[in-house]
Image (tube, rainbow, N blue to C red; front, side, top):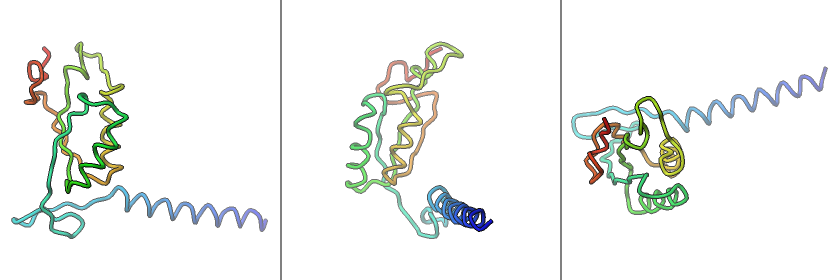
Length: 133
C-alpha cells in the first residue's frame, strides 16, 4: 500500500509539473492598447523578417531562426505555398522542405512568433503567385 501511495504522489507531482510547464510554454495573452500589442502584459512593438521555407532545407531552419533572433527579430513571416502543398486538387504534400508544421515548430523552438500568410496568393516572386487552378 505504501508503494502505491508513493507512486500516486510521484504521478501527481509529474502531472502538476507538466500542467504548469504546458501552460507557461503554450499560453500567451495578446491584446492591443491603441499604441502597441500587449503580449503577456508587456507592451511590444514586434520586428518581423520573412523566411520562405520551401527555398531552404529543414536542416538549416534552426540556424536561420537563431540568426533571426540574434538579429533582433521577434516574428518570422512566411507564405503558405499552396501550389506545392496541393499540387492536384485534393492531394496534399507536406514533406521535406514543404513540411510547414516542422518549420513552424522550429520557429517556436527559437522563441519567435510566426506570422503565417495562408494565401492562396503568394506575392513572393513565385510562379503564378502560388495559385494553381
